Image (cartoon, rainbow, N blue to C red; front, top):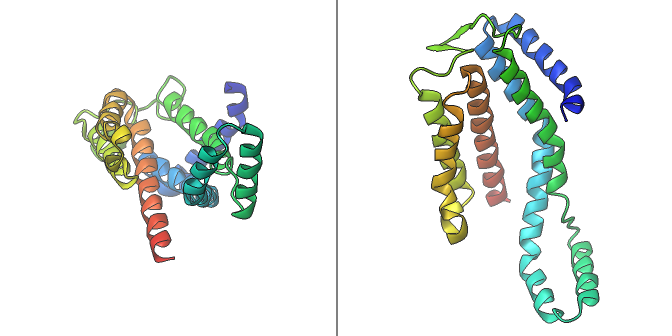
Length: 212
């Protein structure tokens, strides 16, 4: 996996250094590159959202087919495919954009994790606001903000309305705080920026869907 990500990591590391040359601060450079990646990946995010909405729309009919042909798997599969074709829905359409995004996000995570190590571009521990980007946040503000954004994301996605996922609305933010509080601040800045940008994207996508 590391071999596959290596070229992407090199591009992302050089992008952060170039952004630093423009903005003069590694904290701002990390934020800038993270937002730029979110913008580049936006078409994939929109495609994923469209596919998920399409699957949600046909779900009632899909359940009827499963119930009606539960003793006839061959006919069930045939009717299911006909339903997908009728509504132009691809059940894998929501997964493919996510799979294409993951290598980029994993690579950026890897770049920032290594950046604080010996020889990395955060080795000299540059400052950003109250932070030393190579050290954990001494005030624990970023981990708490990461947890808060994770909670809001779960709320926006409607996790509290589903009894099966309601507990995750509280467990996941706590996990985020626990996982991130010992991370280098540079990595936490990326995580918070990515999560907040993703939350804003989701809000506007949902708003656009409501207006449609």
